[in-house]
Image 1 (cartoon, rainbow, N blue to C red):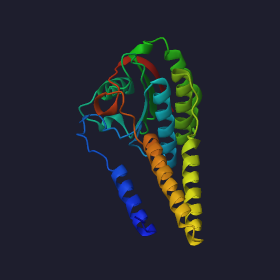
Image 2: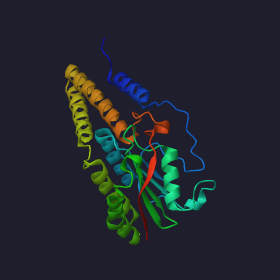
Image 3: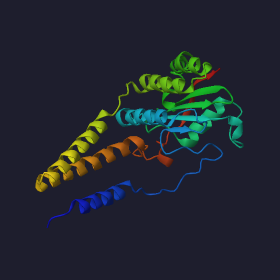
Length: 256
């Protein structure tokens, strides 16, 4: 049975719609603390552009997949906005937020929280219990040497991005790379589609459908890989997608 190009396109759209459907899970209520977004970055103070946030999401997904270290970034306007929380200081707020989110994969419990309160002009790197207080000096070096200088220049994206990269290198022991494989899969799919259409136009319908079919497969593969980059990995099994860890009270605070 021969399928027309129109039917093939409809079938592709059908598969894509099935792929993009997501199960709506019951959302955990973190009140009185800010509700986290679906990924690793919850930018409640709007300090990052969409592209900057997406770059950080890619980085932090790679980090957790390769090192199992969960790093979470949260920006807020002011800790006083969260009535009922432990908001006497950014240290107490960060510790309680860390524990509320249950950051860090068990059993190692080596999660890291980067909290920025724009209105208070304070930031905090909060560390999981695994680190105890032995790594406070490393956290302080990143805070004072990388993050705070950029914040003093009102360059919040640079401070958050450079600080996150330093945290990844220091506490996960790795560098991040852009997932170029997704780009190559997408370009290959596009190339196959162009070749397939060209074959059909030249009367080589059999080869045309072969290349278009391959393009569909590669397109769906690219979607699958991209979904993995954009979505927070829930393999840790923690509540709300977090790993079930807790803070040990260690870390570093900076102000500007």
